[in-house]
Image (cartoon, rainbow over all chains, first blue to last red; front, side, top):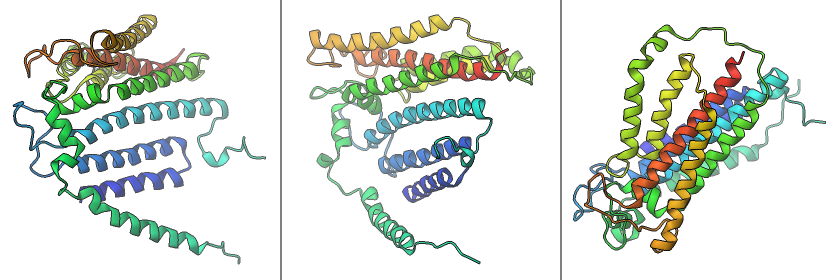
Length: 111
Length: 236
């Protein structure tokens, strides 16, 4: 159930990234889609009745959740932060130059 | 009245993709794989220090810093690249727009009360990254939230050169500590310090050392990002 809802969240984010005209809203939509992907991975890792992967007794290593998706998502969150920061930087620069955030008015590369 | 032609193939593709996706969902949810076939369980069994494992309780930290340490180095490089790029795009020219609102009264008065707790929590999470949930990335961002509060209160970080020096120094120390593994240990990012007693603060060999450097680097980079955005907004 959690994986299905996370896929829905990802699709909502992608829909927003396709349909929105405002650049900042596009980056927020990308952030929502990324959150959906992260939740999908966490839902793969986490089963009912399993504990967080912090081993109290070195002899007992079963009954813990899978640590690999958590580590992957740690990477993914950091990269998402980097992408959002760089995108907002370009957005701010573009707004300073042209005074608009509407992507339908961006005609610089059209001939 | 002319209607726009909608390609019917689009709907067929959409339905086909949704059907393929729905069929794939049980693969994500299947739990009946054997323990030997799941890489996570193998990693968990190696994490406490058996068969050349990491020797720390936290499985996620073991994966991030030990088994995939090279990946974390790449990740930190990506963050460094983005921090540099943001500084490059924001640092040059000054904006004409001035900030119209004064900093919030509550924020500017309560900052001295809140700041030590931010710093202490961030440092605790960095230093206990191999024992409890958390680590360099999370604690670094928390400690950098302290500086975000300062910036919201109208202050500035004046020593930007010192900030960049600390950032580069922590990154260099990460690589130096990792490279020393070639001389004292078996490989790049290999373990060469004594493991110590399991589940204590001074244990895990190079893993907490590396995570502390990652925490310092991530914290200073996030501070630089905040500062550059603020710079653009409220430069006089």
